[in-house]
Length: 137
Image (tube, rainbow, N blue to C red):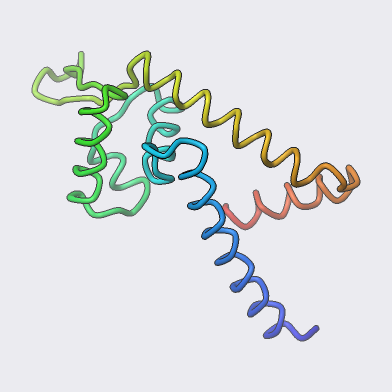
């Protein structure tokens, strides 16, 4: 395969992957979009952050993040707390419900990946994991 053909195949397959990921996220927890899931995951990993930090991290428009945050807040999945270092700044944190839903969806996603990759040899799994890490870096 020529490198131009390989790049075309990669682009096509990554598009299919993204579409499937969005559809699967909707099936696993209909109220939690893939974007919302991703934002909740970042809040968990970071221990909380400002909405502007989320926008910068994911290269999203502030209004897009604002709408997502408002939805997550009204669903009781996140809450705003004053930043101890600067009381004027609001930091977003997961609520207990947010942690619970994130945990449920994460486990569902892991189970789906385990099922989809069950027949793959360990060497292929390791290589695929390494390539994904390298690609996302």
